[in-house]
Amino acid sequence: MRVMVFVKASPDSEAGVMPGEEELAAMMKYNEELVKAGVMLAGDGLHPSSKGARVHFSGDSRTVVDGPFTETKELVAGYWLWQVSSMDEAIEWLRRCPNPHGKEGIVEIRPVFEPEDFGDALTPEIHEQWQRMEAQQGS
Image (tube, rainbow, N blue to C red; front, side, top):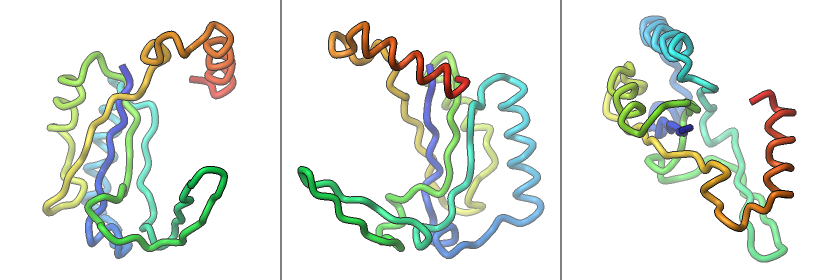
């Protein structure tokens, strides 16, 4: 199964505080372990929300709102996409992670939808389209 691991934002990450050499080295070592184990498919840190935007949808209308956004605890500062055998494995990997905040922080794990999760709504034609797109992405 694939899981998305969200590193929640903190006041420091929203202020653009960058990790020091020691923290960066520890995270790179951890990422190397994930890659060697075949767990890490992707992952990156994100700039503060002040450099981002949101698009609000209401029917056919779209409204763009520039950052920064309040409610820091609801924002994402980074992510990984992992391939694991179970949620327990994902939790175990996350327990080994260096503290991405150095202080208090939250990291959230959520399963990624797989084709079979869509049941009958995923017709053979849509499934074929899905597979074509994945092949083009190299996944």
